[in-house]
Length: 253
Image (cartoon, rainbow, N blue to C red; front, side, top):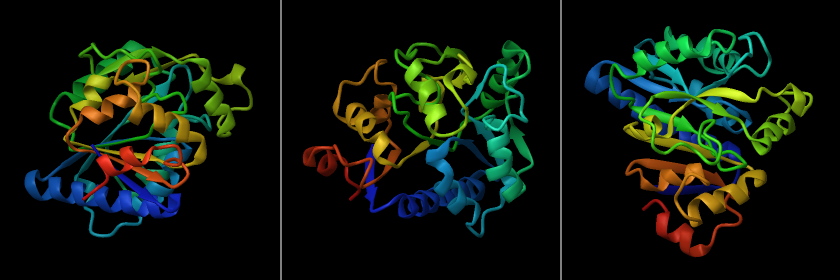
């Protein structure tokens, strides 16, 4: 795992997009196709804006998966991750091959389709964030570190649901679904590379806990420390609680 810290989230987004674009181009050059996983949420906005502005990416050779989706939420809902990806990634790039999970469909069937598709070949690069409760995708604590299933049904805890309200996706917590479909921890770790984009002061406690606390299900994103090709992008605000020892131990050389 490598840490990279930038002055603000705009610089962070541009740097992460540069690495992401290089990974995508490298996979296309090597195998003719790049298989990617895209994260959603407020923390990813600057990164996706920078990535979609990158030139010399053959987006027609990109196959897209996403991390998670609320159960029971139609694709037209403002908080739908399908809608988010369509507006902020697919329409901007013209990606044609994508596997969007419709939260309004029967969950087990959605999981079957998504799992069959993702198991067909390795993922070249996965984009992810870290939740205010330390979650990775929608794997809230205590996360299932044991399942081999690519996608699973998860229960969303109250801190996670409150985060969705504070980010403006829902009016109040009663509107936030209590369950979601999430890519499993095991499946995320199978990605050849992971780029985790984590800006803002509100993420600083979770970043500190996941990078300096024990690795385990109560801090799901702590598992990123075990991945040989994971890069965590922070700004000065999200890195603000980290010790100098942590920063120096994991800093990019």
